[in-house]
Length: 354
Image (cartoon, rainbow, N blue to C red; front, side, top):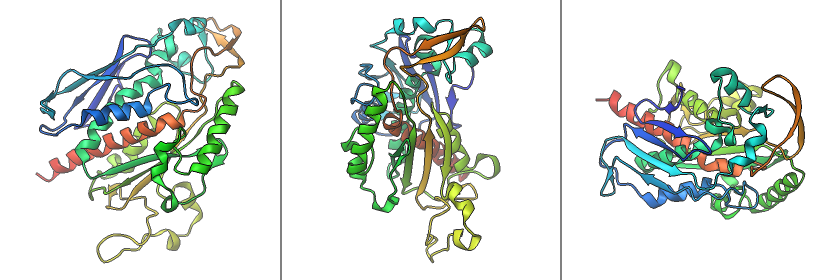
């Protein structure tokens, strides 16, 4: 199964299944001598872990990361950084009813068609549990980037959307509520809505926005390796993501060029930032901002019609512990993937100037 690695210089390869012994990864290309705050890495994992509030899956996983190599006396050695996160709370029997049944809008059918075999326990390799390894690597990438600030947050759940511009949001509110919305009043409404959806055995999607500040100029490559293209790939690789837009996005299509152009200031900054901090595929030093759309979770606690591996129509209903809405736990994953992209381009940029 190829496709398990991300990045060119700062490169992450992940391994493991949702209900296997452990998940983990290998980070190659991380420079030597970077002091690592291991507590910060664990804190980032705690933001993603299941069971942290009443509106997420109640699977109880400590998600404690153990580093196996590449770190000595608190600093990176320049050799591959190996790590693992042991699975501690699997309930594989919750998935025995789908051993030969394809859940609608999951990877069950496509994995079976491609490989002829699948680990049906929690989705196996296709489970969002794999993203914990990305958060570990992203936390190290953040420490490599030092002054770069990456902040993701929830701006909509279903049709309940925060309308305030980014400049009016209070980022200090993000970690004060389980939805991770930077507006206390809207966060309370979203939380109640998610609880109602859960009580109906249903699920709902939403949007995570991200702002990256203090970005060095010159990150990104021309033509096929544009910075925004790699950010798009990174976000679309996250489970349940259905859309990505940066800068003015689709709204920019309604504007005229005279309205959309970012006029320069004498110091090279721009009066507006409809470009979203990226021009010609290369960072210009302005804030990078983008949106990531997440679909409703595909596992429902409702009866659905589907088919089994013999092509017979059958009825099924989800069992076990699942998120009614993924966006609150997706916030640190979005940040991690953004950090991986920037760290990789930061190192590429240093190499190109040697």
